[in-house]
Image (spheres, rainbow, N blue to C red):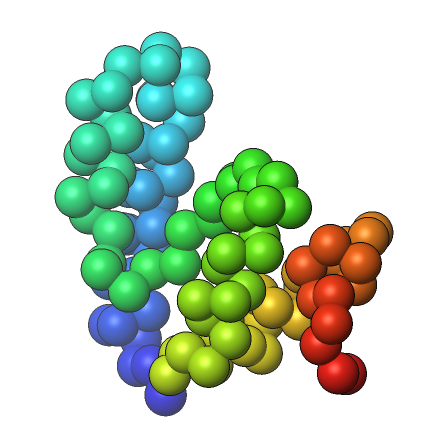
Length: 96
């Protein structure tokens, strides 16, 4: 449970992060982006956009199928299974 001092500190950091993000969006100056990244905690989740083709996904699934990090098997591979033609192109010959 966060006390008031911790909440205040988090709000200050978030306000600074948002201000840096807005400056970067407006100016596209990478110095603001670098400052933003430096202030983020290492464990902060960042959204990424990735582009894959079925050949890439086939390799990733084979390499990560029994990975010790459950994010691969419980999240990513389950998502791959929802793609059109995944059963035919990626999981062909596998028993469900």
